[in-house]
Image (cartoon, rainbow, N blue to C red; front, top):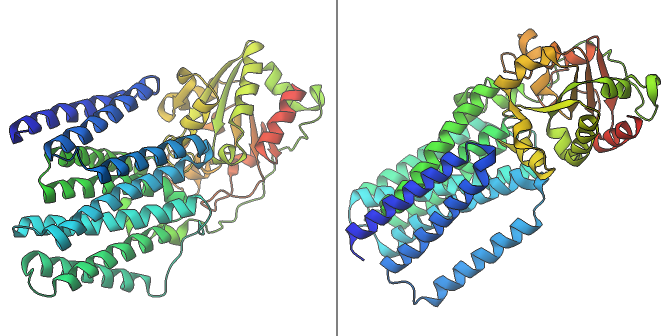
Length: 461
């Protein structure tokens, strides 16, 4: 296959991926968009194999079969609650592939000029940062590693030393390849591994959605750089799409949390998030949900409401209560109520976490409302039901200037007439800021596992 023909096909496949991504902007067409992207990527693999005369390679076919089998295994065994760590894990595999490509070029194939050597060095370094950071993030999300920030002694000086070693090794091998070549390659490998691990260990759980999005962007960027190293325009284009879209999503996440990306990269979030900021104790009414009728105001409010907004959060994911939420919503709709769902962009542990869980419970796409759409609706709603959400509904974000969530856009649950909160307890969320919503009139707090609380509420209604 000629280079011109391959480049033309690469352009067509890139457009197919872009079209698939555009379909993913709507929940209703997201599945179709994902299928188009998957087919385009599969075609890209086959076309590249044809160009490189690799169809006769049994090792390559064995690797493809093993990868497909592993992917099918994950798709059938990973639970929806584990989706954030799976996404982080897969980002890591993408970065690790780019690092492997860079390593092969530097150690085996060799690079013809300084540009190719520099590209291979960057692919190796950024790929190692991605795989190390993504695996640490997956470990945090899966609770194999501590979710709180981990700070080493003299952390800043250590990070600066790693960056200095990385820059020196890159300069040495890219421009003076005959001097300590293998030492420079080893230093690039080790420095990328160390930086990715230390950077992600320092990020707390509150910033994990931003971190996952940033690692996604870095994984795409490392793949694009590897494309430059091997001279493959398709890899450059697809990697660039992933890198740019991941970075745009990272910016959106930062705005949604009122966070500065530089402060996360520098580890400043570890100073403020997770600390306890004392506030007056909650005074919301607690009602045992097993009581019935007017003796249970929560059940009475639910039964009489005609416009209900449900706000899901990470607690719903932990309790795997999305099916109970849908069951209660169906019961209310059967009584003539209109039910909507308010989705905060950073609720959960990855972008779209709540959307995925509710889709698993067969919630209609049209009922999932973004923050800008739903916020004006809270004042008109008869009732708001909060299930496992804390920081994203905390009015302290507008009131408490000395807290880490001050200025963060929130779901304006505080504007509703009546609010029922199903949270595990009344302790602060991850940001360490007590929820002032608990101290407001017209709020009922039902403590305990969300799945159990909702089950008893359903029976009471």
